Image (cartoon, rainbow, N blue to C red; front, side, top):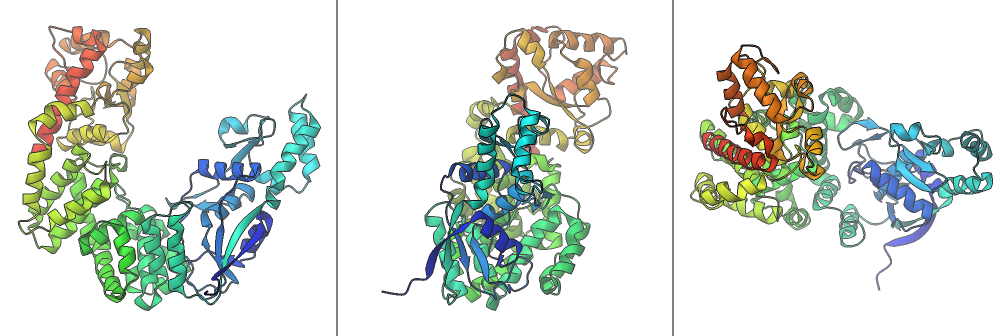
Length: 590
């Protein structure tokens, strides 16, 4: 039987935090960034408090592994799995800031209610509530002692049982002495074996996605300059989010800064068009599908491990260079903008964006005419959003699409086939109209409607000069055509107030001036005011422009018949029909 490749240990939270503070345990390059939400940090602390299992950490006694800084580790051990949990402890218990996946520095403050033994993410209301300890790090970092903390808490909250509160606050402090299981990998294991172990974690406990394994494989493959490829992905995502970080990255990672990879990112320091800011998973999906004509990232994990690894790394290098190329990226973003998607908040369909960039790079490699590329990529992206193409089995669908993009008869023929099957009259008249029966403005269909308005330079609702595009640059409001308080007065359920067909984008002052007025009333006032060149709401002072504005916003208005504004359900249904027609015309114009 082979020798064990690991040993099991139990370490207290306090011991582990001290080892990290003393830099005797370091975070290697094969780890992912801190991606936990504040709620997940809260749940983790709650589990520790109540003694629930929180899984094993994995460390490795190895001193020459590249860290996230690009330097080699000189520490006794490195963290292979457990980074998220340890950073959660550092920010919640010790009050340290974290660098989030958005590359923003922030504190995650967790609050504790001793009476209810309940944890929460700290809010302004909690900070002002004396029943809460609004930041538990004050308990762990207190110089005045635990008894004084209990006394101060009971002074703020008269009538409490001091003994009971002392027990509960003491139990919070005792989290430091809770034990976590640690799997220590043997020092004689090589990087390849450790990477395989890291991969096996996906089979049990908390699943790590294939992108994490790929990033670990890259970092572990110095012989193929994989660590530089890994850092080119990390730093592209960072600089696309925070261009000002360029100089800091150059000064803190001298090895990467001297490489061609870093020079290829130099253009990002002056790039501020952040409508499309990819995560490393987005980048990996695009570069793999573009170069390898496959969509399942698990296949890339395997390719990085087999006998053809050297060829795989070379192809990845070429593909990553194509992705981060200044001309390619800027032209792709310009295409998204030309389709009316001018703000990052509108690009919520990430798989559709990724597939569109795959198509762009594919067509560029095929030397297609640039104007034809723009047309096909625009239509492809909007078709994907319209049909919810990647909402079911995105990986399988993307695999099918990548094959179609590279088919012998070409991507254009493949797109036309999809249009015939997925964008039929039945889709427009029934399926898509039904899709519009949704609530909220943070959905892909409302974004499509706004894109259709931006594309033709429509004015904002009741605006004379300011366009929908302008409103995304400045101050904008989401106006309810049937105001919510009016809907409450007439007995419409809250769940129906934010129906997509009840929403328009308007100037803040126009939204405020309408207030809670019934639509039948304020539309009548609009008519009368414009008939006298005396605008009642907004700046439109003539009927022709007013009716054009109604048409641009798909308002089902008939100046001789205003009963449509007295029946909410009828209004929604009629407006949905107009929105469908507008988006259909928009798609045909792309």
